[in-house]
Length: 418
Image 1 (tube, rainbow, N blue to C red):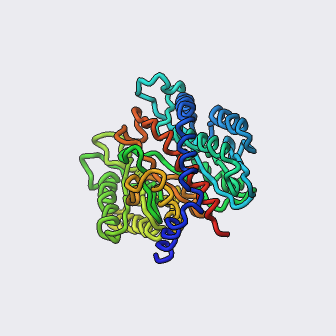
Image 2 (cartoon, rainbow, N blue to C red):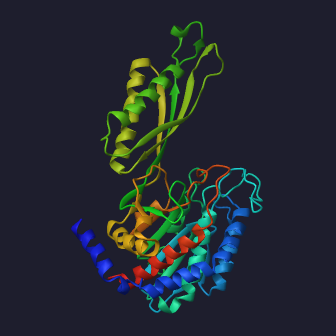
Image 3 (cartoon, one colour):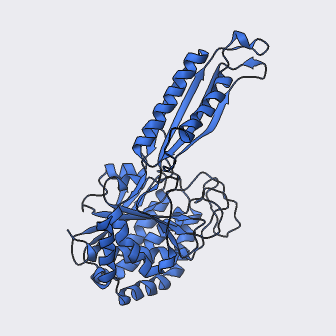
């Protein structure tokens, strides 16, 4: 804690040395304003062309062309459709990365925008069109300020954040496996996600875990069928499943430290063949959200113990699978404390909110368990929720994101101590 506080004080006292002198901030703001009309065009084009996980071919080609015109060294085809673009400044090191995700969701858009999705059944309902635009405009701003950059900046455009097909790694995992954080070796990485409920012009940030571990569980309960009039002749899988669901919740209410956030939700239950037949089989599917690996393992063990107890009590058999889908997003404490005053200097102190950990997930988490990272939420104000057919962003954020990304990149590269 003392070390983090000292770092914040140093940041404030020597802010000009970190590249955020008044003139630099003025330049960044002017360029964000200058490129705002282009940002609108970019975002609306990307919004019209949503593509699903690992299918972002048109999106990838569009982004690569834009970056090549800026004079960046562009590598395509990483993990299929991923892109890595390198901006060399006045020195090769240190190396700072900025990441955007590219994929859309299988949702039918229900807006009346003239730039609504032209791909039926697909929609940018999670703001990835805005994420990409923010990073593209950041690349343009920093390309203009190339002579001001004492290091290297890597722009990462990642496929398949929203979840991969079964038995495949997601976009972040796949890009890391293909060495996106090497050649050059990335020292730190920054990312964001738009979020309704935070005012436009404000961000949400915290040190440590900011988004949750995500695990999925699948339970098959096998009983014995009988006529509904003679339940004693069978083993009712539905009855046992209902008991299992109730007992699972005790893992949150009675076996977890109340100070540690966690969620267990059963989202799907399927069983039975008709109303007068005792069900022979029930399928359950659910999600577990935690902020430590220890609690995640404890809940998995607890589910297994409950099922074993039900097997003894009722004579059922079962099959249980617990899949760890993504780790929690971890904000490096020192790096986060370094960036908070940088962001406050750009937006104003009152616009940088300290948020509680959120049980939503992001596969940016895989980067955060490889190298120092910071991830923050960019407020979109009072909009429809994420992942809904009417979701959109307040387009003023297309000025704000690039200012934060560009300012953070310069501050990090000038303030980095190898």
